[in-house]
Image (cartoon, rainbow, N blue to C red; front, side):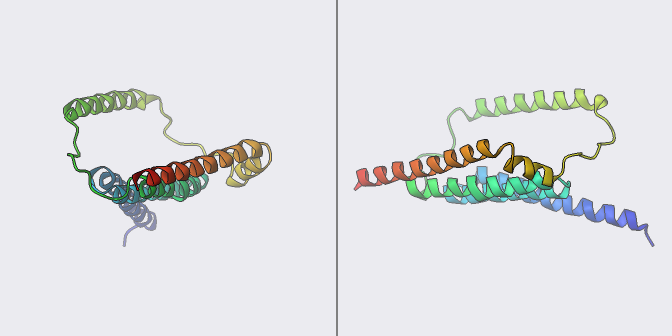
Length: 177
């Protein structure tokens, strides 16, 4: 029989790879699909995959914030903005830009610089990560106490942005009739 810790580590590894595949698959679908609504929904799946990765890494606040902010607000706002403004029709012209090769070269350059930076920082990173001293309860207490005003300002700003998007979409629809 195998060691119980080894089986648990194998199960955690399999779950990690499944969640990673969900996140990467959603991201790839978001950039390759032609229908904008499908792209936005695939982006939502990628956000969910990232939230699950945060939760698996015991970063509960980051995981739940990812779900609330990105899945619950940003992704839904993007879907509504697409549905209200452009519709779900396929683009008439090609999807690729004429300068796609330049974009590919820039992306490869950025990837090379980031890979170099990660490889250079490797020897100085600690092997053992220390446990965070701040709990989710502490963060919640700070958000509802000391940082309640900035939190409310962000909520008002997001609500105003949503209302502005609806008003702009209504004026565009009236202009097309």
